[in-house]
Image 1 (cartoon, rainbow over the protein chains, first blue to last red):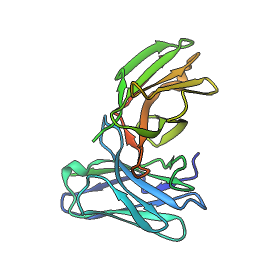
Image 2 (image 1 turned 60 degrees about the vertical axis):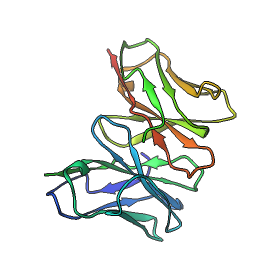
Image 3 (image 1 turned 90 degrees about the vertical axis):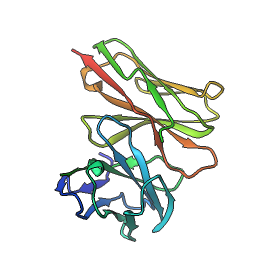
Length: 112
Length: 112
């Protein structure tokens, strides 16, 4: 167990809808990163937050946005869902920018 | 974009045998990490090797890093059925943000 939790476990949405995924990091972890993993692929970096500020972003459109809160929780929001957004979404937290990242179990999103 | 490429894509062995997985990457790195993923769930951190290190051990795991060849290998000795999983290498690029860049993974099956 990594101490990182995500909710919900599974989610089904239709194209065009909006979704919010949640992550609860380990206490004291000031860095959280979000990854998208399509079936059969490795995780792809979406963005990272450090002390509630965005600290880097991957090749994802602006309809992917995030928030990090002072209580070590964070959110990933996706607007105008597309079929290709169907994937496993993973969050990972670390005590600091340069430390090992600890992954949550993921949220599997299906867009119909 | 994916930085690391694991080889082979799939590996099937008998319990007790050793399993070797290789990873190649393209740019200079700060460190390279290996993760395990069971059945499309969260990733479990196995080992981190820094760019100035050549070899690290953790239990039955042995990781080597050759920065001149931009490659790494993960050896699992005396494999068990419970080692059945997908294994990913991930790099942290030198001078970049602390995001992890993953390969596509090696799917390891250990037959009892």
